[in-house]
Image (tube, rainbow, N blue to C red):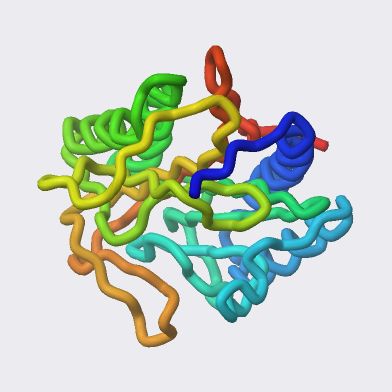
Length: 255
């Protein structure tokens, strides 16, 4: 069942979202040549804790780290390690922060120092896909209106979106109904609910430079592109209102 948030719950989600967004901003500053993904993980963990929240991902289904860090061909769920970042790496960082029982969930892809034209364009288009979908996050529209806009943006720019992982509702739980795909399912097999005030969604385009095909590594978590080409990820937690939608993990939010 889709959970419609009360005004109190929405206020709590704004607080959690502000911490998650600030942690994402901080993580982006840590992405540099010579940094290890485990080092970034530890610093972001400490940042979230210092602001009175806890990392939502740590221990979730036994996930072993506080944030997900996926590099280059890794799409999502990369586990931080002693891997050292080098110039030109694409680094996707997915962050959840839980504050007073509610969650802010967001992600972005950063480039170490400076990327080539293709990498810069992939990151830019992935972010644009989010905002194209966000335009349709309004009362009376359906989830599929968001999905269609994301898919169109990615494919018109020569990229692909994966099918196996999707956006989702978020609130007191990290994953709530409804699913928010980044593509239109043909034929449709799942519900396509109308958007209502008080719904909170994590919209998260995952865009591949090559094909949409994926595989999961032996660690059971890390999802990579099957063709070895780069991928990018961009996500915000949003609120459906009676007017324009609101981003609860506002980009660049500083506490």
